[in-house]
Image 1 (cartoon, rainbow, N blue to C red):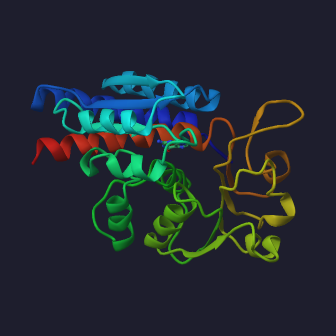
Image 2 (cartoon, rainbow, N blue to C red):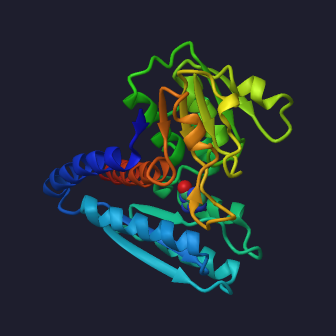
Length: 283
Ligand code: GUN
């Protein structure tokens, strides 16, 4: 069975839009998100368009700030500082990756914790690992929601996350651990990767290598979630980390690329923006 991220996202966005209507009645304004895009990376441009469009669908205010590739780190940091102090802004997102001359870590650290809708700020990450209230990173949060949708008992199962990035792999493992899965993080140095992945009741692929998860690597009846967004070298089309055509008959539930995790990430961002808005309003 295919877990349709687009359909699930549309459903959740409808719920969020209804929530925004009552927030407007209660507080007199709607949540507002600012997205900063530096440079002209086509993938980033496309993601950012998706985020701004989702804001409109949910009834948020949104602002897209574009900056040239040549912008200095100091200019970007000054803009973030200004937005941190702007009472009308609830969430700030700086689209990654940034040009090489800008220190990504410095930029993430500069975003006010209470406006960190990505959940990337070090204090947010610390709170996540300490089990304290925090903004959850969007992609892992969306993946958990998709797993829930399968009606699968996560507690006690074997979950394998392939990939160990700060944005996906590591927080993904923590959320699965919080749901009482037995979690393995595999990566490029893992020996006998197929042996590890074939024990997974839940397999999350987040490596960025086109179709590297083949049918032999997947347990019969597993849930397979594909976080990869790659370009097929031959066709130029988008493809995931999972060889979908081969794996779909073996998995009980599987996501597609596109139309799987991507839309869910954006939808979770909308939820996070509402969370930041509400926290501010209730302070
Ligand atoms: N680049 C790729 N994924 C993300 C994300 O979730 N947030 C931001 N800010 N940049 C990204």
